[in-house]
Structure formats: C-alpha cells, structure tokens
Length: 62
Image (tube, rainbow, N blue to C red; front, side, top):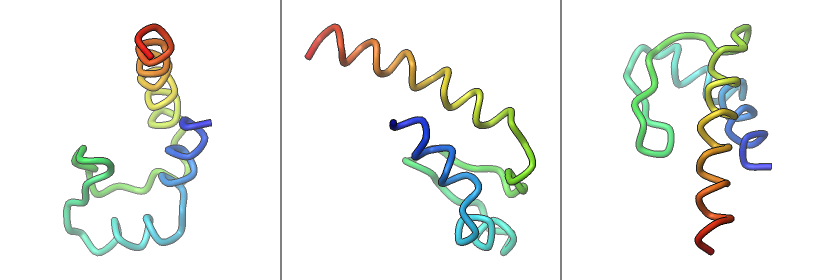
C-alpha cells in the first residue's frame, strides 16, 4: 500500500509542476532530481524494491 502511495506521488500533477519549476525538491527527506517521472517506470520499481525491505524490517521487529 505504501509503495502505491509513493508511486502515485511521483506521477501526481502537482508534484510534476513543482519539478518543472527547476528547484530541487525533497520527497520524504530524499532529494528528487528535477525530471519528469510520469513516463518512467524505473523510479516506481526502485521505490517498491526499497519499500519491500522497509516493510520486512517492520514486520520482523514490530
């Protein structure tokens, strides 16, 4: 569920407008390179991969 939220944020029109301003933005404290992610699947795959480790950690220790 969290991975779907992160992926939705990457293709949200408001987020894309912020990126098009040219200033570097942060997403959850992580710097985001000014680029359009609307047609890119790579950031979505990387986000899902990273979140799988985070979810595994929380499932194990919480």
